[in-house]
Length: 281
Image (tube, rainbow, N blue to C red; front, side):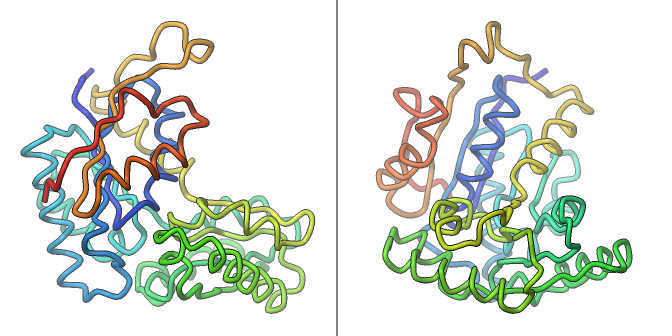
């Protein structure tokens, strides 16, 4: 058991969707969330730059916050840097994210799923290998990739009108490309933050699947395996726990705090205990 916090980082606010699931699955844990908004979006940066940022953030979270585990809550950062991070820090449980293809294929009645993701994720060797494994495991399934240029940036900037326009465009594209599709995979951690708009423009019955629940389960399993899992609070879930949450960033951390409150307030986990601090890396 360890009272040390779990570190979570993303290029911006997208990782809040992962933090949401982590807080639900791990009610006794404290978290440190780092938004690298000052260097976003990662999807437009070279691999070497992304790897350098991931290294700096990880080492700062270890050195300054004493984290016991790290969740790389960004598809691009996972693709580019997680292998190196695990080699560099072999004793630190490090969990990444990838599009939830397997859960989507297991759920789909039509065996047709569409993956909404950034161009960077869809063109990566890591995603291509995942899609190939799923195609082999589900030979009768069809997996359609839908690059969603600009959507993560619109969500990050809070451009509600543009988010709505792009959600309409990309859900329509998914359904036109694969007329029998019944499941959409949200392949970027930003996209669950626009779920309301996506649902508004989707046909009735279309399901949306993201990686957050699987990431939370994997994090819990990894912590439990090495004896670092914090105990479940007494009275939970009838009496919601309020462990610490620290918000850090390379951009405007007060804006980050407002965004976190907006996206996570319904969980009852953000409030007086959430602290916003300046740049950590």
